[in-house]
Image 1 (cartoon, rainbow, N blue to C red):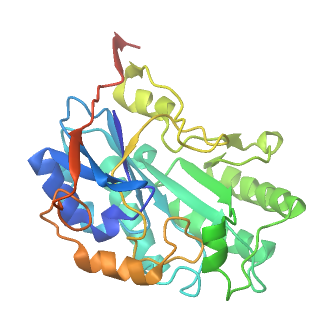
Image 2 (cartoon, rainbow, N blue to C red):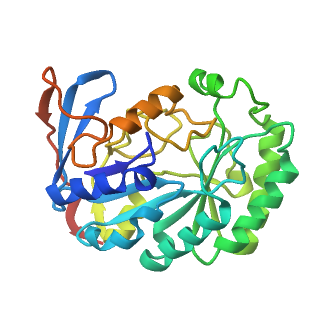
Length: 308
């Protein structure tokens, strides 16, 4: 099993105490997003979890407790964008998160800290030149601390459209995507960083950008030295190459409140949920209720008993 922590919220930044409590107790409860009274019990035994994939803009609260994960393989998808607090409302200043990125990489290695530069969006003040300028500013500070950078262009889902209604945020046009991609590849090549795309319809391989996988069986196999028998995640978009995983996050719980976020679509609910968070509960938000039905999810390791 591969554990996703989490596409739905920044657990490392805001819920690290809860996560480590779950690791120590050996299980976590996850509400079904479509039916909140259905709860899955997820076994967190190291014998079942092949890898943990963390997603974060600020995993600093985890840095001094990574030893608690010594029995697990894991890597981080670490987002650092060039946006200010008008777009990423409460993300710490860039100098701070870049320093955290370096510290994390020093602890676990450059291969296991993937730089995400996404989503790429444009506004009346953020154009192609702006992106290329700040992409290089970040790249020249990270290039010895990561091997890979993942890029994607903003998708204006209906929920996102509501978030950006009072902004000038827009999707790049095709020609703008190509210009941006060409410039980013040139910079990345100079600094020895491999560029991958995330769930993109546009083909960029001719520019040197391959379709990537955030939940990446190839990377995990490389880290483990063991072949995995795992399928593509059918619950993701067709453009997404990720393999199967179990996500333990919950929507409308990330206090970063980035305007481009598809997982937050109700700011007042985000605040309410954060206040209901109990770090000692098996659930990320709140506690088990009388009408809840808890079922243990059947899981197994994807490892094949054959070394490369």
